[in-house]
Length: 615
Image (cartoon, rainbow, N blue to C red):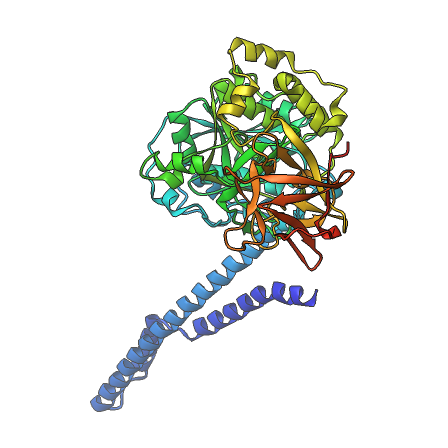
């Protein structure tokens, strides 16, 4: 407290000292009129002799010259002091602006396209009543309020994205933001970053979907910050889900391209040009945007690495799982042109919350399934169903590595247990798409045996557009997905010697990305394995196989499947057996979590159960 008060009084004290110095210098300045008055006074007194008069005049002239010289230096020092005073005054006003969150008029200049003169602009002091209670907010409101609206962010895009020249288009963009639980400062920063970092003439509007209770407060802030001309608030019922709110905004939008982002997102430099070029080349595009992350506590920017941009549906249709870019997609991108690293990446599913789509194709294909269960911030499985429908109805689903935004990460960890909303939406997706594979779906998700109903509007859209079925999707798009194939076994591989299971570890591999380990059993997606009947390969839901490591020849790792990578199940007793690979047995070692395979022995550490996932 003491240090804050001392820092607060430092600038005013310095200003007072500068004023005192200026006043002291001004007192020493004497004008030429003062010297003329002295000369007239001397003349009235008369001169004793002509020589005295000459000496007096010389002395007076010397005095005038010296005083003029001193006056010039005094004025120079005064100008220096006044410059210092101006600097201190600017610092003082800057601190006052930060304290009271004042908005600069340069926002209008930035909107007109002159971003070179933009200076830090601050958010006006919010009303005491937040949009939602502080307990429900997942990011630091105090930190968000203290940041400038146009704070600089780093450009982590690949270098090829920065040097590539994108062709101009006439497409207009409508940005859609669903307002739920973030502070108004974060929401305004989202709008401001979109205005400043979007090419002039390409941004049609920013649509904010809010509840009737939130609308007056948001409109007041938009008016105060001169954003009413570009941002519009649309009312939606408080109980409306995220999918329903996005469909409402799509019907109100007037831009050619719809961009859906979370409410606390900052747009990065050059984010729109790759998107509009891709949309201009392929109008039936559903595009996921590459993302960095903003830490919700410190609001620091965190770079995301590019290998996670491909996603596959999970076998139970509850969500999607990120995987590395497969070899066939990497080879396709090499053939796209001189900038393969900047080319769109085809993916079976988009799973992240920042994505874009053409407005007309989106409405023609029925939009999002607004009958899915969820909340205003999340609808589990909505993008999975939309991605499958988009591919099957003649569209293309891609990720754009050069079109990048930075949403605030709300630390939402994946839930290994199925929620009611997740289960309901998976049943709804299966009823719409997996009718010919329903037995496999019910086998994978036993709790879904009660069945689900598909959206009749979407079913009509699928029939009217002569869309392909799920079999076509598996054969042509999700080629690494083994949904519906015949299996010998599926479930959790559990060690008899300890409560540990074989886990693919997702991104959390302790030794390297994607390296499987023995981990405490929890029955989640990362511990589900299948033993494929046709190839006798042991696979994950991402389509990778358990194979020998290239460098550690006694360790098993994950790699894309090749012929001959066969496993055998050697029964020991009952449902207990050994997993045999190249005449060697899988073994758990308590001192090391890696998967070793070694000479087969009659020891408990080489005995496992291959169990079905519990409901």
